Image (cartoon, rainbow, N blue to C red; front, side, top):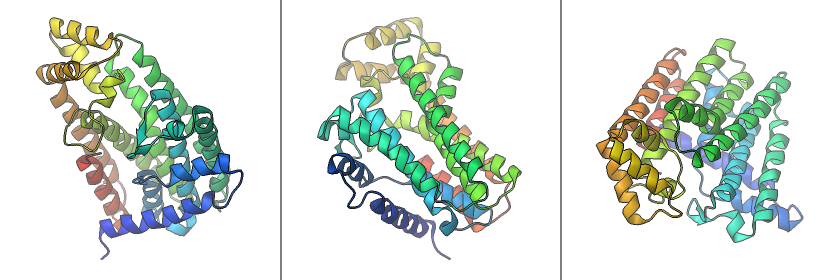
Length: 323
């Protein structure tokens, strides 16, 4: 039996080969070179792999859904390019971001082009439900933009409630995973029940992914840039919990630091200490575990297949990731 790691490697190879064909030899270079640069980045391809596994879990195969899988990855890369502009990030996947390598106007154009290329590939999908697929894809993009807007709004707000944070990550992070799984089920001719189950699975998976990402931000051993969320004054789940559960003097210190023009290394260690004292770190890790357990429970409602097993393995991959 083929190992899950071998399947992942095969899927990534196939997806990367198709991504390399998207803008090959296309002109003008001023548009397509940045697009190619983005697609050459060392991405994990989790979203297109999820789409493929969702399709396989209901009896479909990779040939049916590959165009849609490529479309999902193109859409994901659009969000990364524009996020980097909005967050003023210099690096993405260990490489200079597009707006730093070229300029902001070029990056905006590349991001816009990635959305159009995503639709171009999506519409190559052979399905008698292509209109429904396109609707899910389009409504999902709107949710992604709403989630990003909420994330930016939170940066200027002094207080955020936990339910507001959860609503934001459901739109900004989990929604794209839901799009992938639901489209995969439709292409594989799965039932409405299977679409609902995998949609719920992906919602829980996406939230676990983002919450885990919040924790990785303050782990020295992770592959992420240490405390980048704190430096950008992002209101992560750690901040939201601490602001509602820390001692009053710690809450005041936290608010005061986040109001500073620039957060320094000493501030970061102070914030990390507040997170630990307030129980925010343990709360957040428990939230990851809860979401993962919810996702497992959803998967167990599907019929037992190799693809269902692979989806469980994907959960484990998310839970143990370091970057």
